[in-house]
Figure (cartoon, rainbow, N blue to C red):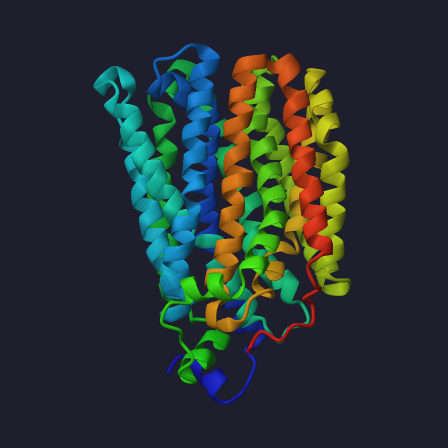
Length: 440
């Protein structure tokens, strides 16, 4: 019997050390997933347009960002598949399977030939591999959050431990932006566009092996082990949660639609936008690197305050700042000043996403009972990526292509504000979950 199962059988809560091991396994795997996916975002915004699409400049950029967005739109498929596995077989097993799929699809993207080599087959293969990558990523957040938060179910620092899943995002960003800047400094722009960008995808595959080793050697959550010991496993949890709690799924998804929109607006589209308005060389990546560092700090602060105060207050603060700052962000970037663009990213990206994300993992897991917690958290989080994180870069790319950078920011900023308003309404209509008992 595992340590977690033994603890559950004795009615004991996991020790801090046992919580730490699960949190570490979660963040290591999530960092690898984030690195793979975020590096893909950087490369899509800066390289793929020329490599895989024989189109005019802005049209090629829009096509590349659209392909990136497709990988987000299919995430709910992964949420359904791996949520079912997590609620029936175990949180850990689902995350191991997902990491295998992510590593394989990432490697295949790195080996995909260019348009000049195989013609139209190049973007077709790229789209196929991005879809597989997106499906695997659909498993990560909801299941990883469930795994950690359940293990910390009786801890007074439950939001802090849950936020470890979120810590993977700024860490992955730092690794992604940092590695891109480092590799670019070692070669010419022509060499990077021709073959240098592929290095990251091979590395992503190799480090996924490390993540697999760590995850396979870690216990499942004591709450799930207890749940399984009681023979309370549902036959179809991924379907049951939609039947029993559709309004909860939709309401909580609106919250993440704003955070997904903020992330992809300022990270994916923001990188492209900075280049479109004249930022040279590695400046957009450097701005993102600075914002990612601040994001990690804001995320730690947000998670601690979510435990001290409550989840809803942290989420509301982030949503209100996003609403107010949606248009000023573009104004600061349009100045062409590196300092002001960095300030824009620190506020719009680092604070809004980081501070709010300190409460997001617990907010999602605490809204669903154990019998379909992974399925519910994954579904709510990932469908938001379709009309939030996935739709925004696609729409933003097309707006940029049609209106150009000097007019596009107004329409995109208004779109972001609409998401912020929807999130604020959803947060206010969702009950506070700080004192919810998870082992039920």
